[in-house]
Amino acid sequence: MHRMRWGVPFAVGAAVLMTAAFRAGTRDSIPYPDGYRQWRHVKSALTGLGGADQSFHHIYANEQAITGYTTGKFPDGAVIVFDKLTGTAANGTINEGARRLVDVMLRDSARFRNSGGWGYEEFVGDTRTPSLDDTRRTACHTCHTQKQAQGFVFSALRP
Image (cartoon, rainbow, N blue to C red; front, side, top):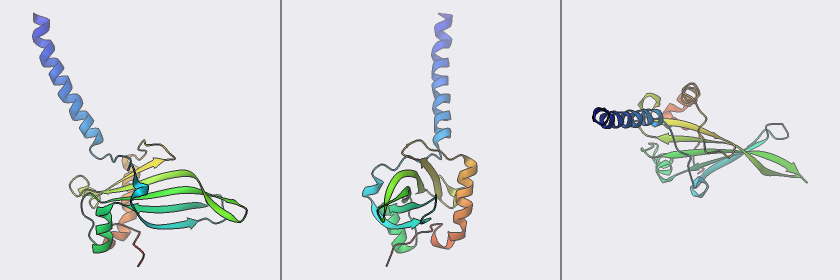
């Protein structure tokens, strides 16, 4: 009976602590943006022509982000995806190769108030495992502050 008296409160307390730890650990996490290639295409670029870092850069935006691009004010829920793929040359054509990374910006002014309302994440290759630590997230935001007047966003819709 003594064991039973402490077992239930201990189990409940442990569950509460584990839930709190899980929430704290995922508070700033950003999920992989499933289906992003079906979103609106913002723009593409081919960089590093002929070099070892030759790559395609594609930018996609969900509907909330499109609202931000058109109005100049990105609402909460806006997601912008930067999809970087290798570029391989063959027979005078440069084709998309393996995925290098997927970078994600998520607008949530409450969760990310210390970084202008944006959260940042990166998924390397074809993984769906987040790879950024706090130092690299801070570096992302530091770079994006140069575009604060554009809502911290580098890209723009083509006219």
